[in-house]
Image 1 (cartoon, rainbow, N blue to C red):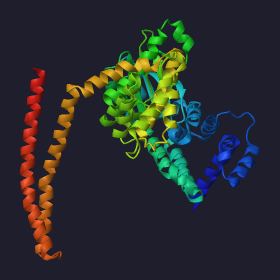
Image 2 (image 1 turned 90 degrees about the vertical axis):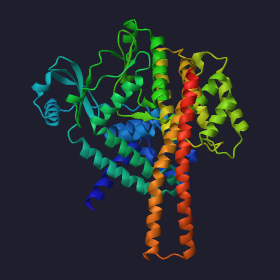
Image 3 (image 1 turned 180 degrees about the vertical axis):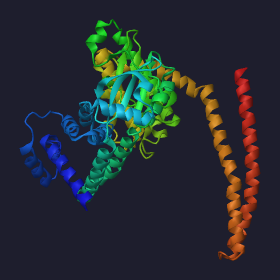
Image 4 (image 1 turned 30 degrees about the horizontal axis):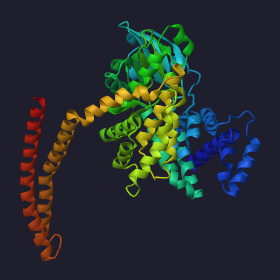
Length: 523
């Protein structure tokens, strides 16, 4: 009872804050609202601030910043769903700045000592004040007892309890929204809050962020001039993460990068290719590539930090993505359309040729224009505009990829206004296509099919034993079935033995054929 009242109080505070920023039923959507909602919207704007931003997404971002870390996380996740909230709204949300004053230095030291189980002077020769602070954690520059300069990220004291309270209030709010506004169920507000809750829980364990950093470092190895700081696992725990220090210039400081003589067009190209190389080669990518998380050293190398949000896509999705991008790069719209249908993004009831024509309408204006006149964000926005027409189904991980691609392009264009993301992407896509559709890709496909067949064959004995047990129980009278049903079970059991041996023979034959093909190809 008291918990519910407390959650309602938090929701009331959130509602007033959102109304002050005109982030509830914003004026821009007035015409789309029902009559009652339009009246309510006008009433709420009576208490709205006069200095509010033009973009409703940016207004929501400012309101969420003032409400705290859980709401900031809510906005960050919502910013990845441009297909739901609209691209302009999502761009406004992408400006969320999760910055706060640092908490007490002594509390940070206590957290480090408690988590790592040793006194501070046994871990670090120097441990400086916080150099950056967000709503969930802050970062200190330190020097280990081994002489390594490191960055130490420390969670805020009591942040877990505050986040738990905020998430509980959000859950209550989502349930109320679904109950009071049935039309909202299409957007699944309850499931969305659960997504936010899960993402927040992941950020509460810095060991998971360390694992993401390690995974990204492996994925970044094939990329040119793209690096991830090393994780110092012996000085990391659930609430403390220690990584090597990056002595570089943040990409937010374009003037400093220019003054250092760093090749900005080359840096922009490195950024684009590094992002696509990680995503397409290894299926993992840094999903929060804003300028504050990216740095350049004096040698022109690109560095990334903060691995709280990492995206992953499977091999099948990567292949379809490559086919789609390659179709645009080569103006083969039919192939790009077929990739959409093969991936299941467009229902089979639609025409491939009609969809290819729609893609042509998006792609043709790209060609013959200067690079700075054709941002990929505009192309992706136009692609989203045809989703309703063809009932396209979008996978969440691909929406996150699209959001990050637009984010990365924005940073690249800040470095080089004439940066052409399409031209920068072409070598990565072409290399991927040659490998995936060539002999190497065919071998990998064959091996995956053999693994699937092997797994299916291994499951057969257990399945047959289950059938045998069921038959025994039936004969023992534990379960009563008609005699003809028992006869059918026995017949299928005998048939199953045949298929099991046949599966083993086929698997052996397929393995032999694959090995012979590999040897022949090598010769």
